Amino acid sequence: MTVRCSAKGCRDDASWVLVWNNPRLHEPGREKQWVACGDHREHLSTFLEVRGFLRRVDPLGAPPSSPRLS
Ligand SMILES: [Zn+2]
Image (cartoon, rainbow, N blue to C red; front, side, top):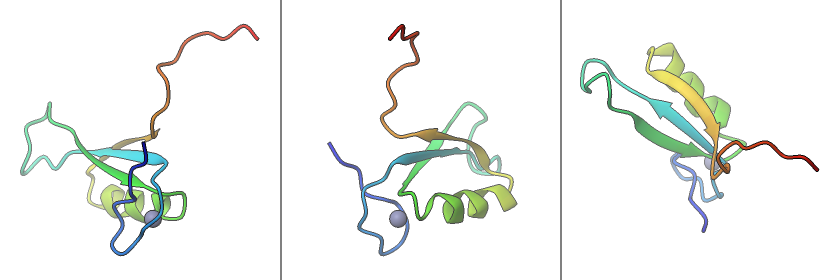
């Protein structure tokens, strides 16, 4: 399954999830998500960060963390 980058006009597959919340619009427990390709991750996260909306950036489709012994 592929997810397209949220950046305007970008047709690349996303590989990052930007989790954000606008306290003026959203309840504190609500989390909005944008997805971004490698090229747009910084652009979009900076956009959110300067507004104080960004919570975290996660790898897209990362498996739940579990210990690996190999
Ligand atoms: Zn992109």
